[in-house]
Image (cartoon, rainbow, N blue to C red; front, side, top):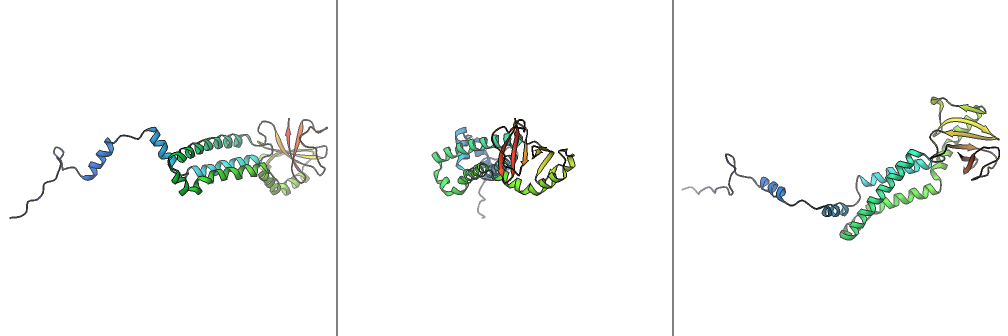
Length: 229
């Protein structure tokens, strides 16, 4: 006699085949209790900053550096950079606080990922305080701006196709008391701003007689930024 074939365990669905192991696992998952909000937060914070958070920090830093490279600032990039930076800083502080409480080994293991966002923020602040973006952009545009100065009259409004000079969109060039004023499109957070070239040293942070409501700030060499108050 042949050995009896073992019968499948478990009852088969009506009119169908017996249930498989995968179906059993799926059923267990479906009836398992869903994680609470606190458990989700702990799981989220236990993971180190990754492919979404770190690039977001770099993008916000670049936006802020661009804003600092515009004389008088740039309203759109200022709002985006400040809002994005505040959001990322809040998220990072929350994650770090939770991770310090429940997942310290993960911080030690992925320490490079955890310290990258603060380092990006620190480098951005140092470069901005030192005016490196503004000085670098002005230096890279100086030759073209001086060439524009030579070919312009006392007051010249540039056509749209002529406006990019060096790395700045210049809309107007004027002369005032021996100072060449370059109006940079969209420059200034709340007040109109631009670049100024003066071979003679200009007083800064004060109203200069004969220059109307302009206030100058020194950038580098003979270059200044101006703001119309």
